[in-house]
Image 1 (cartoon, rainbow, N blue to C red):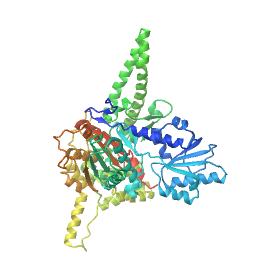
Image 2: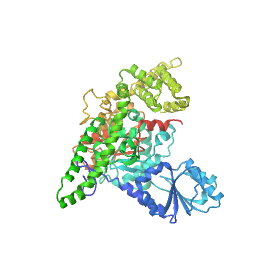
Image 3: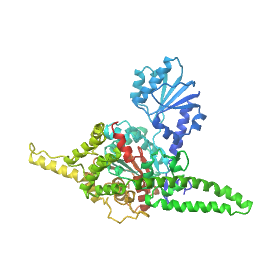
Image 4: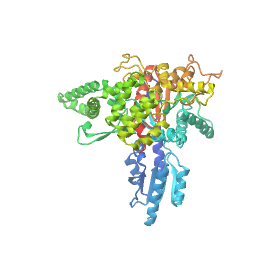
Length: 616
């Protein structure tokens, strides 16, 4: 349902900002850049930007603005007749070197061309240095295509930076911090200053500090009075590494894990589409059937699809019983087109659901795997959990699956005893190869797979010993404390998976995502007040900033009349978020009357997260 100004209204009547304007602005900026090179040109694309560009501009738009052919950026020369060439790439050293090599190859064969390099989202000095060293800097024009947050849906924005988790949290690379901060500044320029900002983690803190600097440079920000977003919550991925490693059980989450969703597109194989070829489908609110099932628990999807199939069948039956020409005309014009679209969508989603169910039923130990995950989360039967993980390694199941279970076991126990840690690592290396040794180094650096440290007391004073023991005890009990303090593990049998009212339904009622529970607590308390003990068990700084203040300088009381924007919350995940977290917060919004917008550096699954830090 939409309001008079075009904004989307939720069940509570709270308007959601029209974030699709970001797509239109990016499209206009791209057209301007294309027109700046008026002659016929070839467009050379960074492979990682092909899907994001699909969400902004199609091939038809590119051709209408002078693009002759589109190529992937690869380590080979390009033989084309176009007089100009435009590159659209991420600002990396590797990309700069590939572009320089292609320019030099053209020089070698005496090909005269005009070159324009568009860096997304900003130009880097390191790239200019590479072009200078290769002797081609003067041959090209270098500009920026300021593409940051891409609308994937009515309530999802993504920077499409899948490598950010590794870059920042593993390598300490702060390159993209400025782009994240700028994306927040741009949102506030469009939708007004966000009055309440909260954050958790080192990256969030850096981003918030830079946002303040950028706003100071730009001058006076828009007033918080007419804002369309009431709260911004910044969450570092390393504050909750358990959630992305758990098996998702919502339909959208399982589709992502089973078939892969890339920038909102999912390519379903032939056995799902019911034809002899695969099909690429855009999964968003435009597909009304998908919108109905995306946040449902998988056990509640197939029955709903069966009901819809019967409705479509009855719609076709109605057409066969029409007697008059006038009624047939109305039927063809008004109903038949919709029925065909519903039939196509039903075929794909029934096929996808069937594929997911078949996969889980074929895996004899799938239920055992879920039960093991649940035991890890609630801290019970740990010996059985350890045995199960060892069995998976010995049987040489998927390397990523075994690695995920190792990490989940370590994270939920805040590190493994030295004996267990060394045993699991040794068995994994023997089973899958010693080329995984560097991957284990990365996981240890990220605190995803660690051993419990021992306190060396021989050369320490009594006070130092007490301090070290206290620190160790705090670290070892962090996850267990948070589970108990925030009620992350619901009581058995309390969760209704068909009509859920608790966020834990996204993991079959076994666990409420820590990130989502923290969002709930922050909104309930309007900050970190009363959560001092929780903050001690989080791995980074926690902060809050309020600009919507009363005359006395305090946050407005709940008794005061608040604008509807106070119920609109932007949750920004730095390092990636899962569809399970999105589904959980959508449910929270439905129960508490909030509207959530989700911004992230990328949508992740356990496999993509681990693949990103895996040394190849």
